[in-house]
Image 1: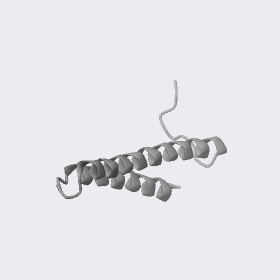
Image 2 (image 1 turned 90 degrees about the horizontal axis):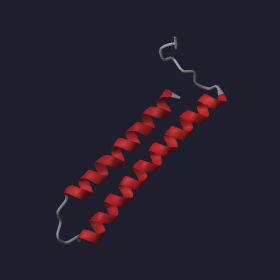
Image 3 (image 1 turned 30 degrees about the vertical axis):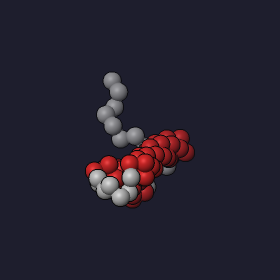
Image 4 (image 1 turned 90 degrees about the vertical axis):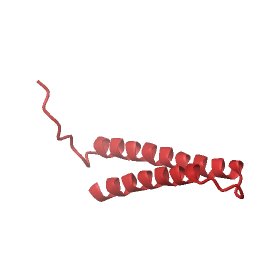
Length: 74
């Protein structure tokens, strides 16, 4: 379970880095529309991975695969 969450975080950070690279590259040959499309695709991937990770953690808690380990309520 831990490795899956770590892999998802790495994927989220990787897609965020890809969007940053697409935004920072100022190639006049590629065009602004293509650069914006690549950046939007990378950010959409990041949002999709984040939502999938949240739903997976919620499902894992609901199925009993993980247990909360936070501070006890008073």
